[in-house]
Image (cartoon, rainbow, N blue to C red):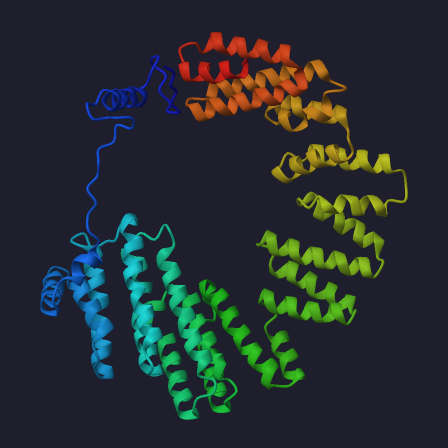
Length: 498
């Protein structure tokens, strides 16, 4: 018999997992009634539906009551699903169900573990069905808001590593959005009540620290913007919130999102001049600066584009990502204006900032000898010891197929030999093979389980394509001798020789 296991055990010829498998085989093969399969006959249990069909209504009710007494959550769920009451009572029933679900899963510790998270969310999602099945729109919203509040609070007392609670929050907000969308054709007084509920909910303190959800609710209010009175209320609400948050850097992103809602209202219901003035008044926010730049780009007013981009670079100098964004926009404007000197200078900056795509464009701009240009760029990048410079230098020499420079780089960084061996093998065959061998031995030295051993064998397979079968066999035999006390590794290496 032969067996193998992928566990990392290396201290003997066979691991406990293989031993357990042999013992189980022994039991099966030597069982008196094993037959050919070793399996015992299984008595088929009756289906639950079949059992219940034979019971009377009174017996079924008694069974359900007995089960419900032992499971308060099930009891509350049955009441919510199958009883009818006035709005106040319906809301109270839903609140009791939510509370019982929370108590069931938080337990004595007051915390829902990662393992319990999915079951908790699954039971909470039953309330979504209740919302969908409720004909009274205002009551449906109130139930949804109850669920939303508890779902957001659950972030504080549950492990949401799997994101299930976050999904529940999103799902609830989307359902509220469906209700709002379906209310477009309702009477104005009912639409106003829905609007007011949304505005009131947006002030819920449960959203403190979860501003994105608060803004999602405010955005739903914009569905009622066709009514001037409600549109003005929303505008005043947003303006008040933004002014309250002024100076708070942590609320900057929230302010920008709320202002975008306000801009959409102005763009749809105001004049073009009002919309442009609003953009100019909020240029300190990235999205509004982009809006104005897009407008000037479409108008081919490239000087204005450059002006806005430069101002953006100055304002956002502490944010490398934004500075790069504004530089790229400015580069495109120079390109459109055929300002080659400025384009070349800025393209070089962008290249050294880690944007290799600008090398090809710079090369096209060069009027002199291309090789001189390449060597100058290469020397500058070679001096740059930063991460960007090193990365750009490697991309540059690969782009230009500079094998001498690439070989020097690989000597200093042997871990990349696999990636560039194919380029270098014709000119530096022997050296490539030696570096590859050292790389394989280093990988073998750091491996400690079967998966890692298989990874080393994968490298050896690729090594064979470069160095040939003889060199591969030499390395395999050397590793077998060196790691003879690691049977799992020897096993994997031996497979390569078959």
